[in-house]
Image (cartoon, rainbow, N blue to C red; front, top):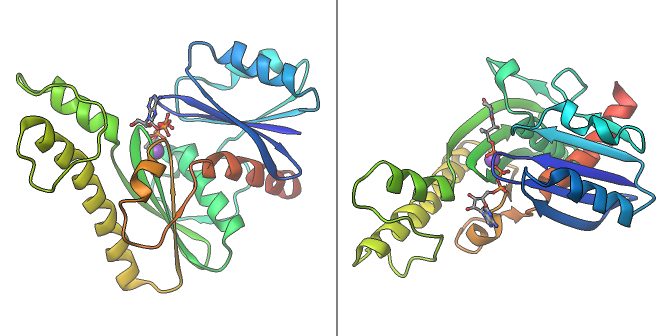
Length: 244
Ligand SMILES: Nc1ncnc2c1ncn2[C@@H]1O[C@H](COP(=O)(O)OP(=O)(O)O)[C@@H](O)[C@H]1O
Ligand SMILES: CC(C)(COP(=O)(O)O)[C@@H](O)C(=O)NCCC(=O)O
Ligand SMILES: [K+]
């Protein structure tokens, strides 16, 4: 059994896999990650491998304490990936974006793929049908948009995510909800439409903490899966042990 762990900038997500079937997923904070992982290992004695990707504050050493009970496999840029990387600065490309791109190639062969991860930041990643990773875009995530407007103004309140009633907000709160949620919806639709007008044979994968909230708002046909990064870690691990 494999435990995959995704260390993002807001939270840690994990999933237990048995023969490629996800049997248990959890979310926890950076502070209590060791206890949380221990509890998962104690509850699933057959887990023998941890597969980890981190863009957050935790590095490889943070997981070393588990290496006496399981194999600790930390994904790094130096390992084998199932795509050609055309990013001009590959050494600064987020490892989460590389895992998403790899997962898209392995799960959806011979197609143009756009992966949208709505997490702390929104990341857009494009891997074409020839398995060339082209790059994408980075923009603020939903929470970040609400917090930035509150933190960098004198008068704007800090709100929690809420479905806007209308495009035209008729109060401060409704204007903020419309700006954040409708704004991001239009942004995502703009990216999708722009890429789809130039490429055929396209699949769009939506993932991240706010994927389910946004999926129902998007008009385009998308594949929404909030566990896509965790599943991609499992698929990439299988690929790397065969190809490294
Ligand atoms: N309980 C929660 N705590 C924090 N963020 C949450 C929670 N539930 C949903 N979210 C949303 O999920 C986003 C973070 O998504 P996530 O994929 O976990 O980020 P990351 O991978 O960057 O850590 C936040 O912007 C927020 O809008
Ligand atoms: C863009 C990110 C901050 C996204 O992180 P996340 O929202 O998943 O926590 C991360 O992929 C990162 O640190 N990237 C490095 C810059 C780049 O990808 O070019
Ligand atoms: K992201």
